[in-house]
Image (cartoon, rainbow, N blue to C red; front, side, top):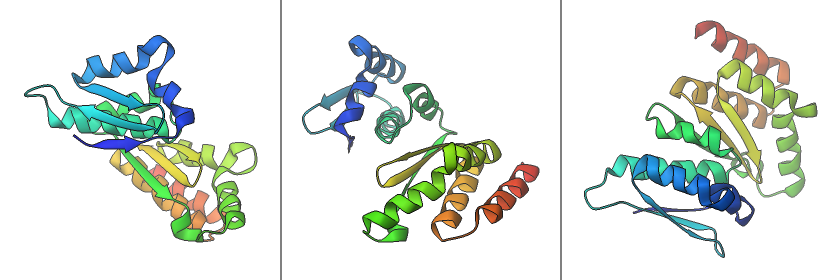
Amino acid sequence: MEYVRIPQRRIGVLIGPDGATRKEFEEATGCALEIDSRTGIVHVTLPEGGDALLGLQLLSVARAIGRGFSPEAARDLLDPETYLVVVDIRDHTGHSRRRLERMRGRIIGRGGRTRRIIEEQSGAQVAVQGRTVSILGSLAATEAAQVSVGMLLGGAEHGSVYHYLEGHRRGR
């Protein structure tokens, strides 16, 4: 099966206290998680005759936790109608650390205000960690949030982004 690499600082979140989070996800999917705490590589192993879709969903759960979502939020990915989109900020800024930090700040906003507005207006959950912005939600919600993030990374004014989101919300 496939694997995903998550930051070492997020491995404990995936495993949970006394392995409870890991066990919960394994029981829900029937798949096994193999976690290398040294490298951060997470393998998903299907049981004989197991459902490959459940394995891929579990892989998405691990990826979401690695990208900064709580296990409770990542659990939504076990529903086939929930999606995870990961946007690499460097695709819009290049490799300048200063520009990366500036763009992270534009997405988060003062006191987390911009991120909160994107979440409220789109219906998606947003996590900004490292060089990525991760979006979790329904197809329409992730699309609206992804467009908003793209607008911000492209230099659009916050007011324009909020206006776009209000239009999206009215159309829901």
